Each structure stands twice: as structure tokens, then as C-alpha cells.
Image 1 (cartoon, rainbow, N blue to C red):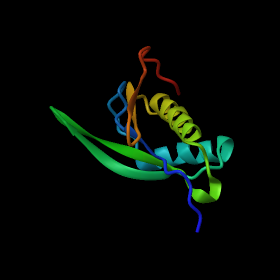
Image 2 (cartoon, rainbow, N blue to C red):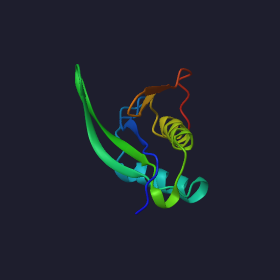
Image 3 (spheres, rainbow, N blue to C red):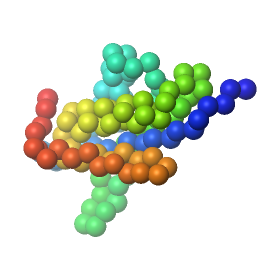
Length: 119
């Protein structure tokens, strides 16, 4: 049995393109995430579909999960920084103005204040 310090971080991202209103598919996010893992990280992430329901509407989205997997132990700081990097990348690639990252004790909101949309 292996035991490591627990860390559970989630990235919450909408799939509706804020510039043109089109909705991306989970396969689009999977492809982006797989490329990130193959290029920058040897970590493992979970990807789950979700639906955001809010005043005046709703939107499809995804939740990307990061944990401290004992086989490839990481520090909590490393895991959080990966979440920030992935969340920032997805914010631009999916044309979002905001992305939320949650931990058991804090919530971080990434903001695209410049409204810059990258291709």
C-alpha cells in the first residue's frame, strides 16, 4: 500500500464559445488535454461532462480532475500549478472569459480580461 498527501483539484470550463455562440464537444477538450499530456506532462487527468445551469440559461461544460496519484507523487503546489496552466490554456482555446479551479479549501477564477481569443 502506498499513502501520499491527498490533493484534489478540479477545473470547471464551459464549452460555449463566447465569441460566436457555438458549443465545442467533449472530444475537442479531450484532444487538447491529450496533446498537453503528451507534450508537457506525464500526469493523468480525468475528464467529465457537466452542465452549468444559471439564471437565464444553461451551458454544457467539462470538469477536469487532478489528484495526487501515489504512483507518480506530486506536491500540492505542482498539481495546482498544472491546473492553472491547463485552465488558462483551455480558457483561450475554448474562447472562454472565465475558468474556475477548485480545491477543498479555495476557489480560483481565471479571467480573460483582455477578451483575447486565440486560435
